[in-house]
Length: 418
Image (cartoon, rainbow, N blue to C red; front, side, top):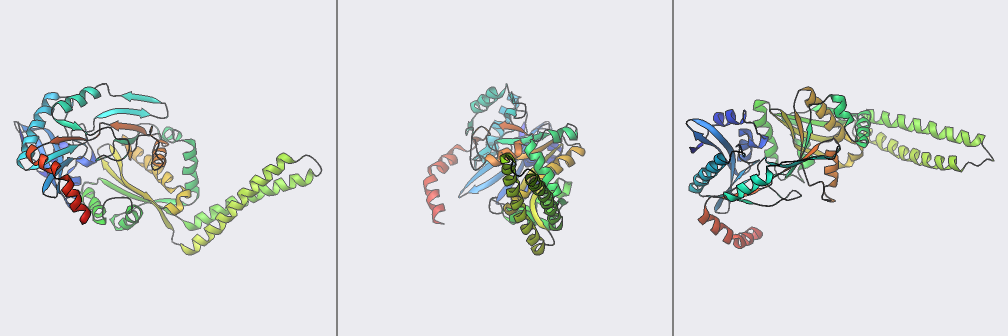
């Protein structure tokens, strides 16, 4: 057995057929990260000209040191202990010779999966054994983080699409179903975009996403070669929106008029219940009046429409995955992201994808003001919360790693002075 650097074609051939996969373990992702200050390596474990395991490694230069990452871990059967140990020893030796001090992995080893609709938990019975084995052969577990402190999110929200469409829709939280329908009636239209529309999503996420515009451009350039990407945006038809609000206002006016008529006919009687109802309905009418003014002005200012939400989807094998998404906070109440999420669930279900991965989330059992809304959004579409093992680190060059660790205070000062 030996570790060998693979060609693009060799790596693709292996990853396209291996049982476990991730969009982050594709050659395309490696090429994208090349322009983000990472060197990419495609490595395979070879035995008698057969590839038994493989990995994309992203190598980052930290001051004078080189550190590697294997996004979503190595592509290997983690249940085969002998294979994992051999691969670990050989890759440690291979990277050590290249003066790479360590490699961080976050394997697709599931710790648990939880369905919040049925309150059913599925615990991986082999998890503790797998974790202890990895630790015994030199991996250091960096802990079970609850938020987004790790290399990649430790929790994913995944919708199983192998169900009838009506069941997928009925499984959505009732409050969210109303929001989906409301956005549709409001004049929100879902549009398939292209790389020419890259500014739409970049403008919506640039303040929260740690990548430059070049990253977004490269995502399109490399993923579209094998048709691994879709890009959609939700656009508000401001004329349709005004008509929708006008109809709602007129309907509410009729309700209020009927209540007033009813009160007039009951003059001199106990009308406390009707009066309370009148107060509530007129309050809502006043809210709609303000919305009507807003919608009228919006049409004047934006007759061409407004981009409300954006979403980049990668499509790899049987999984559609939300790589990046954003929305315009000013129009949050129109619920465009809700409608777009449902429309894409519908699309990929019809195209026979097995699952729709809504992307990372935090531990749903840990309350966090910053992330509660994110978790609620994803779980309300009846997504399973899948918990993974988290980050592990394997030191590959002990001498250089020791120097790296001891130089941390100096590196911190140098970084601070920049």
